[in-house]
Amino acid sequence: MTPPYLMTNTILNLIIQVAQKLGEINAQYLNKQTPQLRKRNRIKTIQASLQIEGNTLSLDQVTALFENKRVIGPKKDVQEVINAIKVYEQINRFDFKNEKAFLKAHQLLMDKLINTNGQYRKTGVGIAKGNQLTHLAPPAKNIAYLMKDLFQYLKTTKDDVLISSAVFHYEMEFIHPFMDGNGRMGRLWQTLILMSQYPIFEFLPFETFISQHQKDYYQALSKSDKIGHSTPFIEFILNMLNQALAEVLQFNNRIMTDQDRIEYFISLNKGPFTRKDYMDVFKNISSASASRDLKKAVELNLLLKKGNKNATVYLVNKS
Image 1 (cartoon, rainbow, N blue to C red):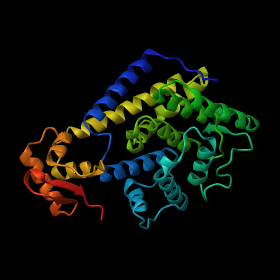
Image 2 (image 1 turned 180 degrees about the vertical axis):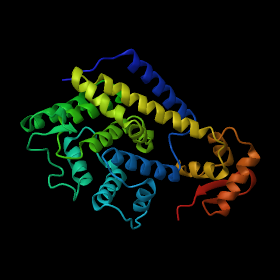
Image 3 (image 1 turned 45 degrees about the horizontal axis):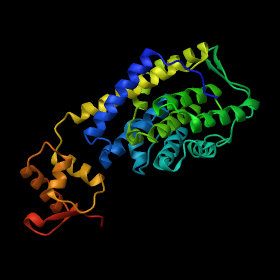
Image 4 (image 1 turned 30 degrees about the vertical axis):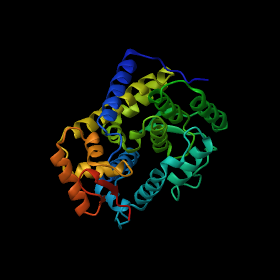
């Protein structure tokens, strides 16, 4: 059964805007980021997703843990980051349609934080703000079949992943299948679903925008609860994705340095190539600039040069 939502004009307009930006990103060879940018964005993703859950570690502290450095901070917060790094580093190994993979991800994400990591809750839970109960989750006895139905939706839906990822995120939050870690699992699994069609989402820290609009995030969840379908939440998430993609395009409006170009080209994992191949990727640079870039890359031992003049080819130095 398809979880309920309405296809509003807001959703349609946002899908068009997101699709346009994704097309522009592909056209501008931004779908593959440099290793440095991928690392920076993954750190932002982890820090923002955990910050939403109350983690106090700063971006610098998360970066230090990412680099295996010692960090002074609350033991629980440090463990949350260590776990998240492990999970996101192997995100491509999880099948977003597989419920066992979902439970395995939770087991890793909540390792040493709760005793029931990787297991659905066995008791009832409610979410309260202050003295007010804001959400009463379905009974524990219903979780198994509710989650089975939700994964069946992922396997059979014809919805675009921009929709299905948001639907899953909301419905999982509504079911609240775990004693703890539901929010971070919802955001992780939405990323995984989006990646299945748009690889750029692996390193797109849209969680940063959710963190900046945390009040709106919870209001969208609450509003969807009250009306009985995920429409407000879908609208909110699409707006966050739209903003995150706009930032990628804005970042690209800067003037790329030779180092930026070299790092990006190497990330494409091309085989032997010529200067013309290099210029086919970077269409706005002159042949002289391309030659200087390649000469610098050879001097830095990033590329190996073979042949002379028109017969020159380059290879990525993998040693």
